[in-house]
Length: 344
Ligand code: DOR
Ligand code: ZN
Image (cartoon, rainbow, N blue to C red; front, side, top):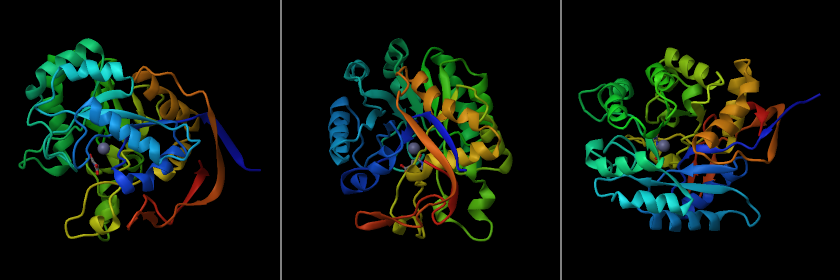
């Protein structure tokens, strides 16, 4: 007999879709499984305004199959020029759920980000007042800080000060990658939560580097030690509603990953729920999957939980494709060519 697990339809609270034909090539991989996704704004021409977000959202919807009920939720890219008044426009739109802070230069397409959050004080004040969520890429860019320490130094040098200055600001620290980030979120108030990717739950830095460098395991924040991975797994499977699912699935063409200077980003959207289910199952915490994947993110973003259900099947035979078509390129999914036990 095959095992099955029926859960409320999950949502992905951190997703990169890109744009144009590349977006169209991947969006349905998310839409097949997830009810909603929070779409990141770091396009080549960033999504800075609600008007930009509305147009991008339209393009995404047009790329979906006619009967899809997938709902793209949008974010704005916070720059030193973002007017505080845009926060109210975002709130009224109903589809812009968060403003994303990229420290300038921290990651892919982050050049328009902030040198310091102090450049955005009026915007942050307005967000604190209205309850709009600040989504944060939590890494410093100081060249003197070791790449493996950039998240914890961000927490010490930047995030603690930001939280002190805006104690009521609602914050999601994205793609947690260290035990320090887990502890920070646990100790913070109810207004602070964190997303956890499948790849940070699956991989440590030995996976990335031992036996040859694996460019398809390279992302930012970079994967850390086994101890960090264990702390993330414990947090994700704990049933603590401060931690919820955000894949940070970030497609890059194979040719740009397998290069002398390889791009940062791991593509996991198509089999994400299978990967999470396998991880929760191995940890003996499968009953915690639904909260993490389907409840806590919606609750934090103050949206209704999905009402549709999905049934996962433990077939032990679902193989993730080794290569995906990516418009005129190829895309290598996380764990491509490998078998997952749970089929989404
Ligand atoms: O690895 C990453 N890729 N981390 C990010 O923060 C951005 C993302 C991307 O857009 O490719
Ligand atoms: Zn991201």
